[in-house]
Length: 207
Image 1 (cartoon, rainbow, N blue to C red):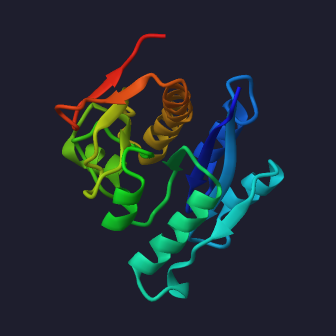
Image 2 (spheres, helix red, strand yellow):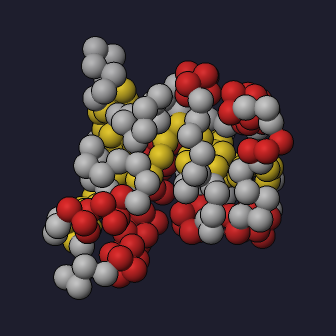
């Protein structure tokens, strides 16, 4: 069985990356994490990758003239890895339209809200401030907008009765750590399809 090759991009602690490594990397399903890239040279995600024996690379914002040049270099590195899928796991840089077009329907992101509600940054605080009782986690394909791509999977998460950010964030992270690997597994198995007539619609085939 040929492997399904995944590159993960992360800017911070890399807990979602760790969930992917623990649940998928090198397992019986043939999913391999073949590279972890970051815009932050001191990102803990890079250390997690190194401990797992996964190749890493840094594409720091200040080392390129503009976002387009950085994303071109990042894209070339992804192509060199022969990646089937790019996973944004806490990657805090907006990707250029050229990058999105280059990897159309091959880039997914995890977002801590039930999109289209509360896109962008501080989604957890947005939900708390709005008075919501339920928020959640969305995994979606990346398009040229902000958290606006076709939705693949969603799972609700209750906001803590205390309205405490840390408590709610902890519950969201636990859900992300299950939903993101599940989505990758389904994509690797060929169960996720974009509707040809309506590209906003994602079909999930039964097992």
